[in-house]
Length: 288
Image (cartoon, rainbow, N blue to C red; front, side, top):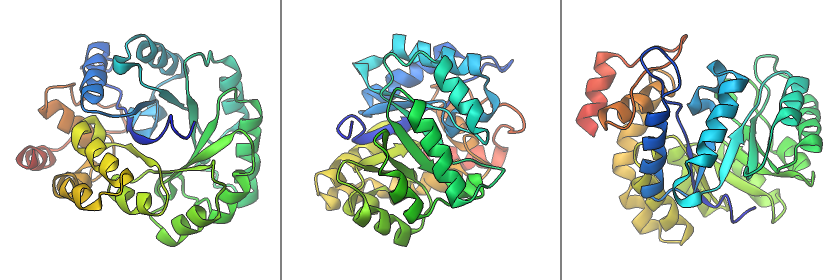
């Protein structure tokens, strides 16, 4: 599994039509664009895929489509998470996991559980999930940080394969990198923190920018994994210039506007998100 998720995973957006139905033609163009750009695996129904405003039927339909329209036959990671542990367990039990490499599940948000509660939450999910579980720590969205001690305690579970770490706390990242078992994977959840994280043991990234710039993002990750940090740095100026604008009006507004400008899919998002402002669109266009 470590090999399967090594490199660049793309946190796929979910394209919508003007009437906010799933745009499968745009989704297929996006899959082809990312595969041709050299990404190593797909992540469907993550935060960037607007998982908060797609229902269970849509999530399953997206998974079915990607398994049937998979350029390069890349591994597929399925995202499901939330603040109701039992609801996630029920969803896992209802799913057909054929063809899915791993489950990506964000730490519980809104109800802000204690570290003990986070441990119990993930253990309950991992106990019933038929595929390995990749945890996701993103305190800016969840309101609660998974500490390094919590991550390392959960690393002992035989069905928890690793963590997508997006805390931005390099002290915490180092504690995980130093203390983790050899078969527990550390994946960057922050595009521009990927190279330094690889330098201390991360095996790659699950990237937002890879939707639009798959060749640049995967090139940077590949170079860093090969220990060629000089080459990895050559990709950073363009990626770094775009990166803040992917989040300035909330993700995935920025990346969808970028994809629209590249004529890959439209920029429609579901409420409470709204499309990029004229100012943001002009900024992204000038950088592209």
